[in-house]
Length: 214
Image (cartoon, rainbow, N blue to C red):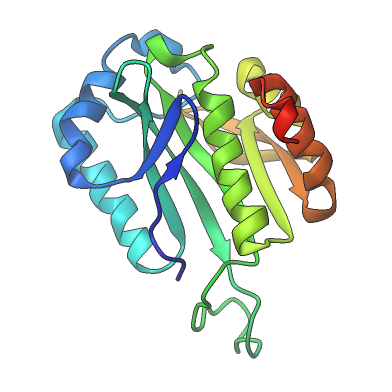
């Protein structure tokens, strides 16, 4: 499984998720819950503890790398995100099909998801820089073949943010999951391939004001 890391940017630091962050996460999640119409976000301390513990159990199996998002402008934890659904294509094919088998040192493909932010951090660039830091780790350190990003098809704001990164729409999977509002949701699937990363990186650099580093 990949080593735990802290990812630092100009205005954001992604810190390995831990139970020590629970109270800060609760405070962030309680700011204005009306912004979570299509996003399932733990409410209250008990739910947040269960959320963090379940996530850490997934991490121990090598299937996710979760982060608490620290906004350096305020020095507060303002949400969470993760690299998830990590798949390892190294080594022999597992049998029978569908068995996880042993994991490798670094993933071959991954998703970015379960991202949520406090209301005060939304629309500030925190989400964009957080995505950039995780994409850079995945493509430049792990050298993954693909990153997948998903959103409730109704979530216009999240879909616009994904498209602004330069991700391509792969399609919509109908009746894909239970929605945060307890309906059956359709899910829009997007992806970025390793061959597309240089142009995507340049695009994000420009939007973050880092064009000189491209």
